[in-house]
Image 1 (cartoon, helix red, strand yellow):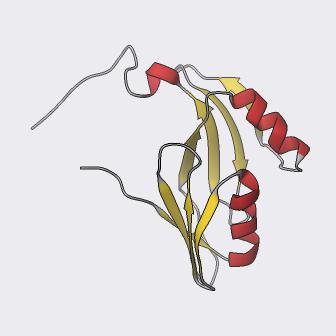
Image 2 (cartoon, rainbow, N blue to C red):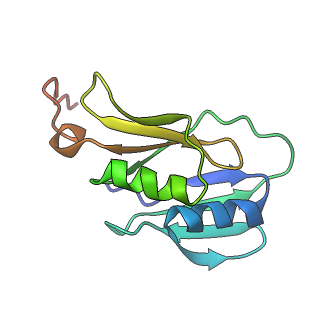
Length: 126
């Protein structure tokens, strides 16, 4: 199995699509109620779906980038505001945190080999 995409609910499609384009993603579908984006590396996609009412966001979106500190500095120069600067974590990832216009937490990170093969990796199959 392979993960195809994730769809995030948003409250303002215009503001949200601009946010993700400015973050560096290519918009490949554009309708008033649905937008889809392609990641610059790896061919993954994700989409936005317009929702009405108040959103409660518990989702955390992870985007990996090898030159994390450089990316964060570039985005800050564009006006993006970060809740957390790039920080080394105890689980061996380096992460920066920001939120999209609908409140979804975004973690920009670099984990290298530790993303799939951390020192504590287990393989449990049924």
